[in-house]
Amino acid sequence: MHTISIHAQQLSVSKSLPEAHQELLRQLLMVLRKLCREVPRSHVTPVLAGHFVGPSLLWKPGSKFVVYPDSREHASLAALVRCLVLFLDDVWNDIDEQARVPASLLYGSPRA
Image (cartoon, rainbow, N blue to C red; front, side, top):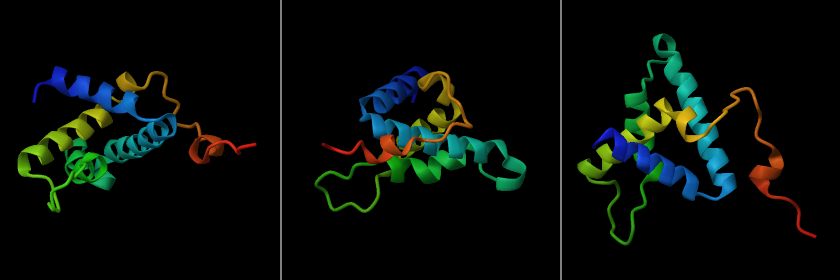
């Protein structure tokens, strides 16, 4: 898969989600990025993070009774998550890794 195609998918996936889901995805990717920065201790690289997290995170099985995506789809989803981890700052501008997620964003605001 070409890098430009993957980057287009990143933007499409991240911006098509509801705001709360975007924030949760961003937070998960920040955790993965922190793990990847600690390779000597964590042994997690962007490739491994993509391989193990990508299909579970992004795969939508549809109507088939398939337990797991085929190898081509698995590779595509893994590449997408790998690139999201590597280019997180390009997808979401001005990321503050120290900031916490507001509870109101995660749980929604109370209705009147």
